[in-house]
Length: 520
Ligand SMILES: C[S@@+](CC[C@H](N)C(=O)[O-])C[C@H]1O[C@@H](n2cnc3c(N)ncnc32)[C@H](O)[C@@H]1O
Image (cartoon, rainbow, N blue to C red; front, top):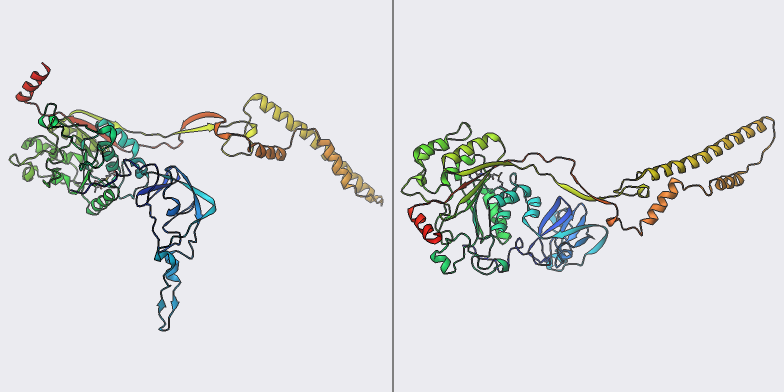
C-alpha cells in the first residue's frame, strides 16, 4: 500500500498560495496551459534557477513560488541565448591536448539563485491544478476524455465520495484525475479528512455490523491499462500528484484477465466497485468480467462472438477466472452498479448494448454529447469606438449615423470648394507664365485661408481618433456595452457515444425477509 502524503494532493486542496515542489499551472491563454512542478533550487541552465520559457516570455520559478493562486505574473529578463545548457555545450574551448574543455561550473550550479529582473512586456497567470486544467495540459499518450464528457459521465454514474470506480483503459489519465476527485473522502491512512465529509459511510449496508462499528469506506479508483509504458507513466504522474493512496494502476488486458485484484492488504475486497467506465476499443469483450455471478456458457458465447476480424473471439470457456468454482466478482455486492462505455462509432454501441442485455444490465441508454462553448463578453457598438480594439465602430443608432453623414458632407463641401480654388489658382499661374508675368508664391497665406475654412466644422478622422485615445484614459471599458453570450463560431463535433446501464444488486429470499422486517 502506497504511503499517504502528509499534505493533501493539490488536486483536492491546493491551499491559497503556490508552494515549492508542488504542481502549478502557467496559463498563457484560455486553452494554452503549461504544467510544471515548482522548484526553488538552483538550476544548471539559468542563474535565476529553473525557468519556463514561453512565447509570452520567460518565467523563473522563483517568481511563481509563494504567489496567491490566480496571480498575474510578469515575465522576466532571462538570457536564454548564452546561459542555456545547449549554448554552454557549444561554448567549449580547446585545451592543450586539442580536445574540448568543459566550461567551469557557474554560480547557479553551486546553489545561488539570482533574483530575476522584470521584463518590459509579457505576463501569464498562475493557476492551481485541477482535473479540468490537467486535462488541458497533460502529456497526451492517447486520445483523452474531455471535461464536458467526464463531468456528465460521473454524474450519470452517480459517483460520490467514498465510491469505488473501475476505469479501463486509463490511457493518459484524464478521466482518472476527475474520478479521483469525485470519490475522495479522505486518505485511507486517516491523515487528511476533508471537513465536510467526515464520517460518510457510503457503500456500507444499512444496519451492517461495519456501519454500527462506525466503519468508513474510503473512495478508490481502479485503473487498468493494457499498454505497459502508458500504465507506468500514469503511475508516476499519480505518485507525483499525491494520489497514489487512492488510485491503483494495473497493467493488464482486461478482455482476457478481468478486473479482480490480488489480495495485497490494500485490495482485500477486489475493486468492490459500484461505478465503471470503459474507454476501450471493444468494451463488449470486457463485460463478461463485470458480472455478479459467472455467466453461463451460452451467454459467454454470445457476448464474446465478434464480427470484427481484428478483434479475436475470446474463448470464454477456457478463461479460468470465469469458471464457476473460482469466479470472483469485482462489483460491490450491496449496491447497484452503474456503467458507462465510451465508443466512437455506432457499430460498437450495438455490440455493447447486445452484450449488456445478455448479461442482465438494465436501463440501457445511449447519449451523444455535442458540447458547445458559450462566449460571454461585452459588446461595444458606436462611433465613439472608432479606432479602438474589440469593439464595433459603426453607428449604434440612426441618429448617430445621420449625424456622421451630415458631418462628412459638410467637410466634403468645404474640401471640394478648396480643391476648385486650388485648380483655378494653378490655371491662373500657368496663364500668367505664358504671358511672361512673374507671380509670387503665397503658400503661407493659402494655408491660413484653408485653416480658416475648416474652423468650426465637425472634426476630421484624425482628430476623432486622437480624441478616442484620450477618452480611453477615463472610460471604464469593462462595464461598458451590452453583456452578450454567443456560441463560438466553430462547432465542436461528435466525440463519442456514451452507453449507460445499471446492474441491480442481487436479491434473494433472505434479503427480502430483512427488508420486510426493516420496512414493514
Ligand atoms: C482512448 S484511450 C483512454 C483514454 C483515457 N480514458 C483518458 O481519459 O485519458 C484507450 C486506452 O485503452 C487501452 N486499452 C486498449 N485495449 C485494452 C485492454 N484490453 N485492456 C486494457 N486497456 C486497453 C489503450 O492502450 C488506450 O490507452
